[in-house]
Length: 199
Image 1 (tube, one colour):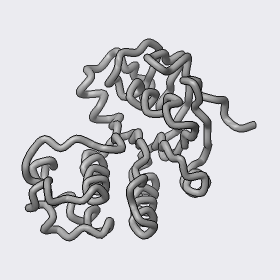
Image 2 (cartoon, rainbow, N blue to C red):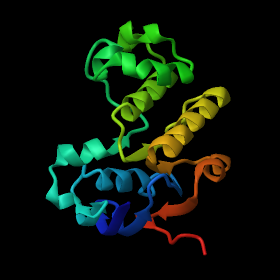
Image 3 (cartoon, rainbow, N blue to C red):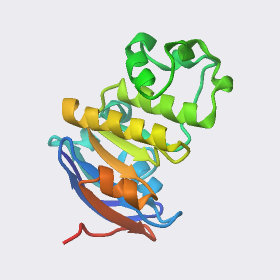
Image 4 (cartoon, rainbow, N blue to C red):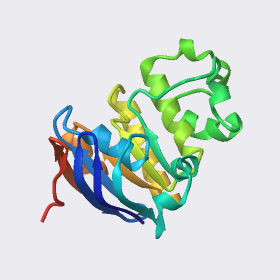
């Protein structure tokens, strides 16, 4: 279980949330309202104050890299640092099943990153996060650049991770229909304030 209490960061004020294993909290709200900054603060990527724990272990008690192996932030435009796709994975062969479920052939691993479309990069970044088997995935608009079929495939793949591994998600979306499909709870972030759960 991920617990966040009184989290303050640039653009985020006194945020708090409880996220059970296998749950999906959806964050909505205006662009620039603080949703991405909240996710980055939970992942300890930006300066922040407050108390965060995972399964009773305080974030302050573990190193930043160790925390971010369990609580992965997936940006809307994830980074790529090597020339070939497969260089971004511990073992590309372990990623091919998920990639194929997202409409990407196994040979995409041998491609140069520069060959990828925006949607292919987005799907491959999600696969890259999932193969690391995190406890919590912080998803910043993971389907924003995808067509409806690809959106459905991504949602199905993430649902499988929830069922089989009890992976929990904090999922940012501007799509109200998607919020209803994937979320157990929807909360609004505006002017850096995380609104309360619905009554």
